[in-house]
Image (cartoon, rainbow, N blue to C red; front, top):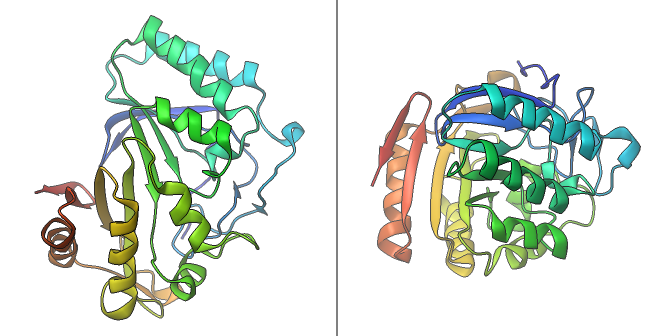
Length: 259
């Protein structure tokens, strides 16, 4: 079952399995998920608005977001990260670059030294302001679940026109890129065989600073999807390290294996 959407601009702090104590920022909307993908595994369920260009009037304003972040940073205590995520693809906000810049100012004044993270599916990296903004954050976390077009379409169900080649090219050269890849099996399987080999080849093209592998929290029988086991994720991370010489780690709910 999908979890409820975030009903506020700022949420948490929550304990993230990858980021520690994280204060979340949802710059989009409390009413529906707005994204360029409709991933079959998304914990928020179906994408309510599948688009590359949401109307600004349907989103939180810059002023609303910055006021919410400022108030939260004044009271939230110790943090390990300040994270742009929320109900969909956060970089779709037309003022995303300005938001990052202003949140960095608030961070420096109220919680200096806390890294800023952005969870993104990478579909907006061809947009120069978005890319420039991601170059300035400490933790640019970009999704890549497939290395071939067929598997990509089955898992991520992108808005028409967003090709895998475009995604991969957009990720190349991004400073400090942390690649995040979800592996699953069942009616769609990307953890072995040709789909896995294609993914590994794409990772080699991108050359990220790090790869983080993870899976579903549990099997999703209704969707015909199954979680990949921890030992399988560890093996995938070992393949990345041994074959590509790229740092990799495997994560699982409540547990993290570092290599």
